[in-house]
Amino acid sequence: MKPTLLLLAAGMGSRYGGLKQLDGLGPNGETIMDYSIYDAIQAGFGKIVFVIRKDFEQEFRNKILSKYEGHIPAELCFQALEDLPAGFKVPEGRQKPWGTNHAVLMAKDIIKEPFCVINCDDFYNRDCFKVIGKFLAELPEGSKNRYAMVGFRVGNTLSDNGTVARGICSKDAEENLTTVVERTEIERHAEGVQYKDENGAWVTVGDNTPVSMNVWGFTPDYFAYSEDYFKEFLADPKNMANLKAEFFIPLMVNKLINERTATVKVLDTTSKWFGVTYAADRQSVVDKIQGLIDAGIYPAKLF
Image (tube, rainbow, N blue to C red; front, side):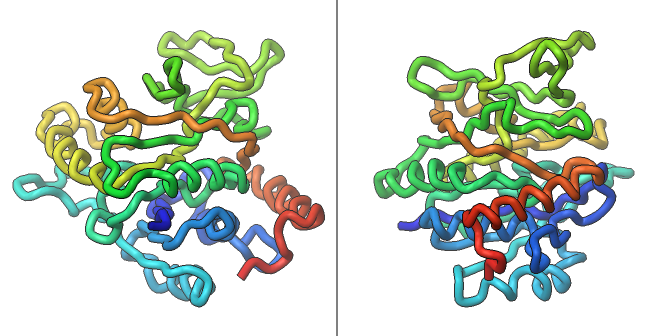
């Protein structure tokens, strides 16, 4: 069975100042996720599913979904603040979405095959989809508890216009993930790539240190674990009191690997990430895409 690509597109780009998922950066108005989908099709993915907010469904259908007709089957599901398990309600004053793993849960009734989760506003490059697509396609039928993530080399994931947030990964001798620690300020200094730790000190890491760019490979059993753990998350008073607490994918993954319920293979990629973290990044992304077209890696018009 061909794997499915699950694209998380419900978030608003607060630092960028708009819906960067819908921003045309290619020569014919292509979005970053158009290139991800093109690469995923080349890598053998058989279906795409988008998680979006209901309030921009029509614009999304008109600008995005229509272009994939005849290329790959596509479906939509919706993330809403009010979409909670029975017995729970949104705390008064909460406006922030519940996070990436809550978004993943929205696809539980649609996806029945191995799937890859990505962000829609990151340009991952083709090798990323090749390595995760190969892993998922080669899983024996009915596989459970064998997951993967693409570990980008941190030096390939930086912005020239400010710090970035990345999940710094550790792995064991079998290349399985042992921890993901979110570091919210990472940038290149004279000493090399550094992140700011809990005490405000800058810590140097090697350029090839693997980081999570939110490219995860799961089998459908992941949904059941997520449903159960989301209830635990909501039942914790401190999470309900914190109006910005989020149910992130690494939170779920760390629980599963710490309890030895699942393994997560860290897949190396030579891909160089780029994206629009800041408005000042936009022209650089446009130029890099044009460079890839000029090099013959992408056609001028994708779909």
